Length: 250
Image (cartoon, rainbow, N blue to C red; front, side, top):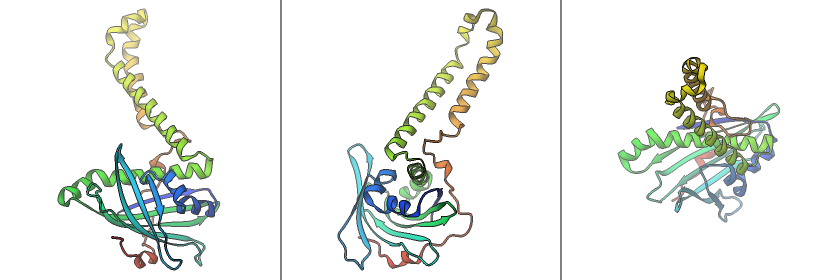
């Protein structure tokens, strides 16, 4: 699989399963989807669904998918797999597949995903995917996993987590802006009187330190962060067998 994300979530396995398998719950925390709707299906058939993603205000791309899950496995783990496709001409993702694994681990669950897709738009699409879109969707997946973790572990709803992230992002941006502007304010040093000379040396260091803190300090505990998730598997990972039983929807 081209992308891999892993998060350890201290939560009940059934709660995690519900938050990830129920469309109304899933679409709340997953940044990649705006709406997910299950379609009618027979009990012995894979679950079909429609999904939509709001790319820009007034622009939504949609597609269809098929999913199957293994809620009860002999080793106590669970698996969910899916295939999807989008006929929308503005969707870079033409078709793809992926899986989720739920691995009980002590007082929590190791929740991981692996997925890949075929980009649209020929050579241009391949370059755009490699340089921009694939890193972006990898970040969005990891950020969403941490958003889900905060919901389950700390009771921070996905909506509140988003507000926390936007607020912290705004504060960091303001610090960088103000400190960056302050680096060019040597003409105001005379206001410090006899302390002007020491401030001439000290203020650039303090302002540079403020910028570094704003850019590199770890996010607050209640703010989702992609960096908290593992982006490479520690061991070789294989797609579940159930994925091979699914056909790509058209």
